[in-house]
View: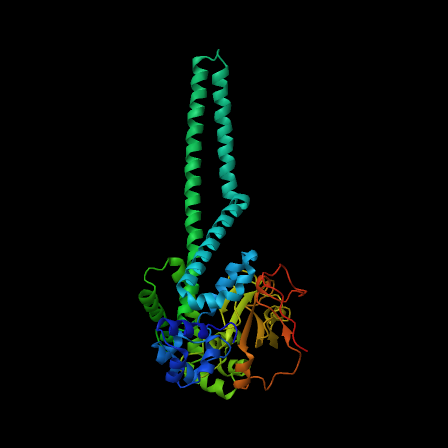
Length: 447
């Protein structure tokens, strides 16, 4: 399957071991022609076949699993979005990652650092243009410089100034010079602090995302505990002993929400009811007394290595379209650096708060997903207070939706064409496009 990295990883590992295709195929108990299709990403591989190939190659099956590098693929696509002259390279991203995973991670890491530097520069520019404290300080410095220049000009050009008057002018220069020095020192301290805050904010977000990806957004330690705060502290101490305060605060907040969801919807009970109800969010929500956003979060972190359950992706956005929660799904990426597609049901849900929406959506590459969305108020309602809404969208592949019976209650309708973000979308004639795509147009479908 195009976009998969499993076949590329298998081929590279086989070459490292200097194994012939026929030898590996025989060891794994499959035909050489089937292995050839797998290695060229023309056939998916999972289950017993994946385990047999991994064993023959001396690897853990998870090292070859489909989608294991999906976030890295998305990161490199974002890199190319900033270099439209290299758009043709998008077709080789999977090959590059499969053959040179270390270099791919270095490129992605350096690209994030460049993004961070640009964000810092943009922050300083905004402060210079809009920060009243900075403007006042600069104005004070300019006023002081003008006073020093005027006073020194008088002393320089006027020869008949008596001694007391000259002394008064000298005192003015002395006092104004001290004011200028103090203002300059304050400005330097201000910029030092601003740079530290900006650097911490950008680097902490990257560390936050990396840690969640490594954990696959799952925290087994918080599943059945009477002391979630202590469990969270233990995770941070053991796994991130050198994390910044900003990173620790972000993760502490995320894990606290996870622990609340786990306490409200215990894993064993939630899994059992999910299997009986085709993982219906509304039935799960009603049974456990949780709102649909919490139920979506629980479903998005349900997949474990030993559980045969659907894999869900989740994004929660505020009314401005800014992501507040991201749980990427293989083949359905959630951009980190660019705006997301305005055609997602998550945005439609914001126009009808409280109403659950269900839709089949199709990406330009033809992959289909079941998407369910709902917008809820994140603050208590009260007279005279404007509610603050956020919208959550839960997605799962249509193949998983079929396999687990999720489409039984789905009303038949025409699938909706969507993208991920304008810069990385091949649907060129989209009416919602806000910026050019770096990708070539999607190929025409056969009649």
